[in-house]
Image 1 (tube, rainbow, N blue to C red):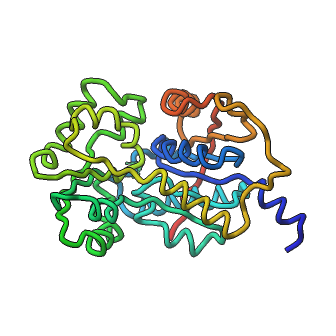
Image 2: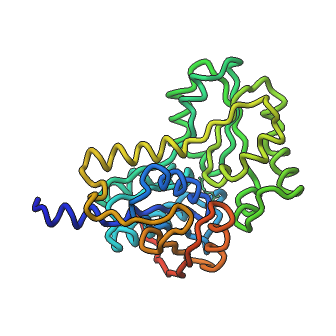
Image 3: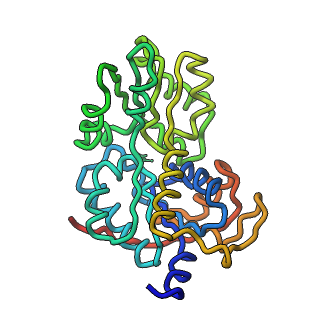
Length: 286
Ligand code: DGL
């Protein structure tokens, strides 16, 4: 490979996808370890939430968005959605020949950490019923019992920017009550949207549960893969920017739904101040 090609690849953006705004929690973690990388975030807001959709629908949307990101010449893709990862990660890897990183509920760390040997998982219904999640459970749970709860209605509220109203606190409490009623000492967040409910969760659970969220681990995994494949941005091409003002050179936000809403929620949830564009992305069949 020529030097020119290496430099071209290294300034290419990293694609990040989610059904909506949940993947912004992963984007924030990536920015903190890779502040000079260009990021292209795609929210499939028109079709959100994915969590109670048919498997074939989730797959077709994720493949379509992966294809669209590849056409934008991203150098790697982070599937910042547990539901999309559960159904589509392997097919995406077969179809697109760039590094693809997925997210999975942290069953392994929870099973290692739990003292009471009871842990909870809060994830979408689709993630919980997927073969990939159930394989993860049987591989890593060992003697730890996992109480799996679907987070009904939570994603819709977060998509609307609600992370702390009495209504979402009540809904969240209902979702995790069976976990609180057990002797669980650990809670795995199995949906990237739920990272934005951390404060609400601390309020509800006090100190009863240690919360396991894998966003930092995903960012580290991305750094490892880009390093191994020599794809980290070349320091000669580093763009300087202030921490608070994100240049649109470094971050592009796109939505298949309401772009202004995505920009608004991104400002509210992770403090980035960039406009978002509306895009149309076709689904891709298996
Ligand atoms: N943020 C996603 C996940 O991690 C999807 C939530 C949804 O669209 O229901 O599963």
